[in-house]
Image 1 (cartoon, one colour):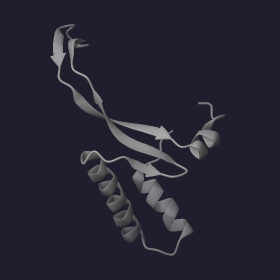
Image 2 (image 1 turned 135 degrees about the vertical axis):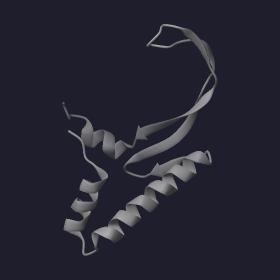
Image 3 (image 1 turned 180 degrees about the vertical axis):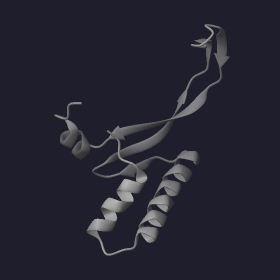
Length: 97
């Protein structure tokens, strides 16, 4: 099961006295701020939730194209990672799919 941005907007709309258009704009601005910070190599720490950051994956000479099996070189590149905070870890500890 997944939760979409539209559903998040609707859930917030039902709990606060703000119109959906403003909520959507705030959420879009929030995500833009997170993306811009990550592009600028900043760590985004949301206390009680978790931390987003960009880590560098080193270059590899022997990566394999899964479709063709061809060996191809891969340059070093950034990868976005998320580490859940203590509170989120505790809340999700017993969740089973």
